[in-house]
Image 1 (cartoon, rainbow, N blue to C red):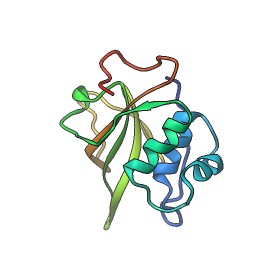
Image 2: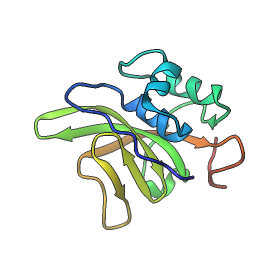
Image 3: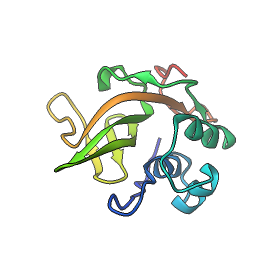
Image 4: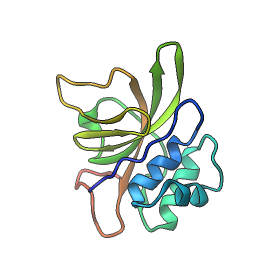
Amino acid sequence: MHILLVKQDWKTEDTCGQCCVAMLLQISKTKAVQAIGHKNATKSSELRRALQLHEMRIGSRLRKFIDFDNVSDTAILLGEWRRGKNKCQHWVVWSAPYLYDPIEGVLKVDARVRPSHFRPTHYLPVRGSNGRGSGKSRV
């Protein structure tokens, strides 16, 4: 799946979930905010609903994150983001082997390189309506 990074301003916005929807659907952040219905922090159910309305298949519940090797090739990850003394719950897009973080940008993840600013705790597997995505996706 080809992903274009959609950014948020971490000082003034709480739109990481909306940015993830925009990246996965390849739409603007403004349209993703409309799909979610607000500019505030998002729940997994809101992300699922917005993606399903656009015919994307997404897991029915959050799954515990163990390691990047155990996540479907495309997923939305939830975890703790940190910058200095600032920390918060944060959504990012995983499209193996890249992490698309609305705040920090794109990071290639492998056995030696793990994100220092983001610690995943859960994920939602994602599969496109036209069969895009990995065969190991357990949606």
